[in-house]
Image (cartoon, rainbow, N blue to C red; front, side, top):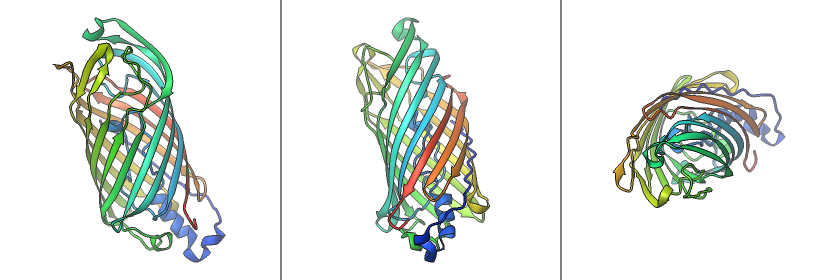
Length: 331
């Protein structure tokens, strides 16, 4: 999946009397530039998410609450169900929370994401449904996910006061994202809001700042448990899905930054009751993001992406908006 994201953040005037001794404008510019978005909002599928600045530093004790909406149309993001010629729309409401903390002297982050989805559309079944047309209209919770990140090098755990003097060089980080089968699922239906299985995504990331530019590279792999209650009482297995993201980020004045990103994912072939499917993924996407910090605590983000190339022919379009509120003691 190739994904180009162009992100901006602009800062408006504000006043924080409690931080006058800490040069609040300078501190806030650093926070907005490095921790503007704590959670990737591309939650339609974990393998296809885009997350520039995933391993950037932020003050210890910072909290983030995010509420968002995302709309998709086209095929299903997973691309691994035995369907074709899909014309499906989803509306996704997302609530998320993230917290930055001290982990062995480096900054760490934990987040939890809970999506609620409305799905409707049609698709043609493959051999599983003998070419029948599938229609689905459903509303409910999708699978909940949580992610633990740690910066292993170059992003020390800093207080809000200490953070004003921090300047990034090289950051090396790692993370583990776990998705639980908590969403709505009906084994008599082929298309569901939940995948009815667990997934685990370890990832490693590198971020290098040179002047106003920051280059990032993230490599991960998603591993899946079996769905032993798949459509028709079958067992569905899936091999690991590998992903790679690259980001070129430029820091403008007054907290504005832009990011050009590339994401590709491959693998993930499935088997149903031991029969291998022809759904090996080798996919790329393009996208863009516009983020506006409104004041010290609030931000708005607009984003969109579209499939560029998909071996599984499961391209889809995504449009979304998110509001973020951030707070910390003394902030």
